[in-house]
Image (cartoon, rainbow over all chains, first blue to last red; front, side, top):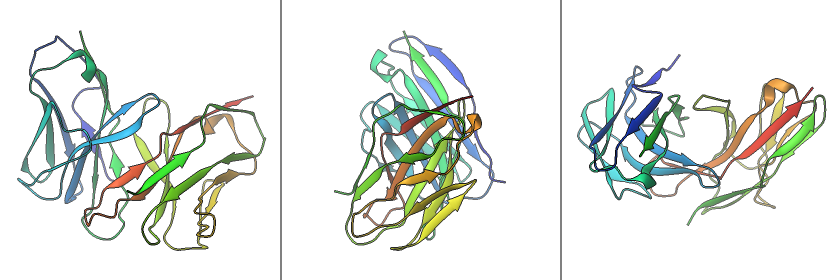
Length: 113
Length: 113
């Protein structure tokens, strides 16, 4: 079974801090994604990556950056956390061919105070 | 652009009731269609999919039929259980050449004993 592991379930940070959210998948998937989930807004794509060192902006990239130095790991970085970035963050991965399903981690609930 | 519209929730049912969650889509061509489910405290997981018109996807007693005439992919289950309480998301691939999904806003299902 594919396992997507997010390093933290809950995180509390202060405004202005630099925040790193880590995601690791164990199935050699080419694609990796970061979404945020907010009530009434569903899932919104922040960034995705289709290969090592490759990244593409999603729908809401402002205030975020990503890093993919190894195939299995995809990091989301909040350069200077703000209260409007309080949210649930979901990482996902998929194979790079066909209509492969996304496999999600259990999420990181980030609170910025 | 491509989009998915789901019915507003929450949907509240008693155990053994019939479930329908509506999903309509706007897309170029005839993309694959997906239903994902998110149980409390977890990430999303693929529930079922259909890859072409008139296909029926099914899993765990849930069914959805790809209807191109009505651009719909409604989720149904004949007899819900308390364990089906979750948030359900309809999704389709974006027509961008990348393997990104567009998600609906999600519909929360609450099943009481």
